[in-house]
Image 1: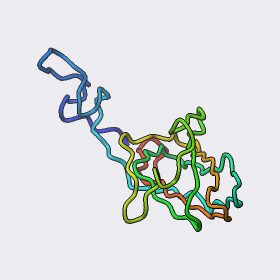
Image 2 (image 1 turned 120 degrees about the vertical axis):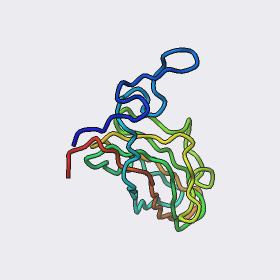
Image 3 (image 1 turned 135 degrees about the vertical axis):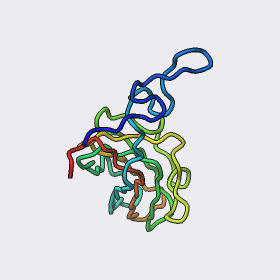
Image 4 (image 1 turned 135 degrees about the horizontal axis):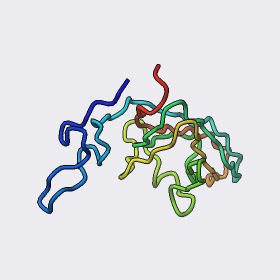
Length: 155
């Protein structure tokens, strides 16, 4: 399926603005109509963290389309743990250090929003390092909520 041209720039990627010609803000210069993607979630888990223990590089495989991650929700059996989420393609961490779960993992009723959505490439993986802080075995499930982008094979 061919991309539809952007209606704002007629597919040219540029528009006239107050300071002259500029990149089209609607399509970000691609010339293609904006495609918000299809709602999709990836669930990570169950991740069983031993009392006071650590689990490194737990992964979830991204399928045949890139995934724009927008919200994070989770459940756990014990109160506290830290998590460091990374992109498998370049091992890029999402934070400067592992973050306590109560600071960045929302609930199903109130998921944590990413101020800027993060895109995981198709066939890549979401990686996470977990450390239990509760002193008891902790079973964690994270739900990465977002959209699949239309960059994969037609279905």
